[in-house]
Image 1 (cartoon, rainbow, N blue to C red):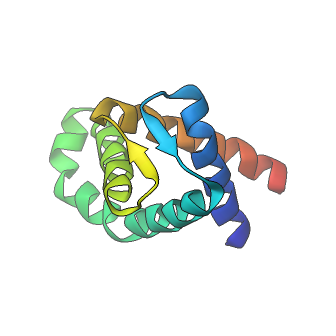
Image 2: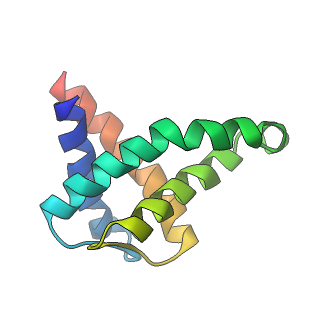
Image 3: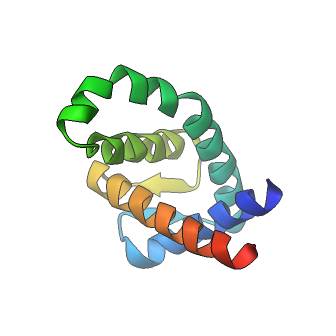
Length: 109
């Protein structure tokens, strides 16, 4: 679990390199944002996915990207030092964070 937390924090630190609309001040901020993102994904995201299930079905799952972006925006609103400028940056950031996390998790195993 700790390794996953650090992997997500590293992923958050890499996001500003690719997406100009995201800024992370330091690694401690990334650690806090990673833990809050994990909590938001564990507690809030499932409720949103269930509530939007019919619409998600109609969009063939594309609404999930929007929900993931909302989770990233929510965390950026709570954590000082972690900034997401726009909704589009949040969507691309959540997609990139998922890819980075998956790749880094493969190396840790």
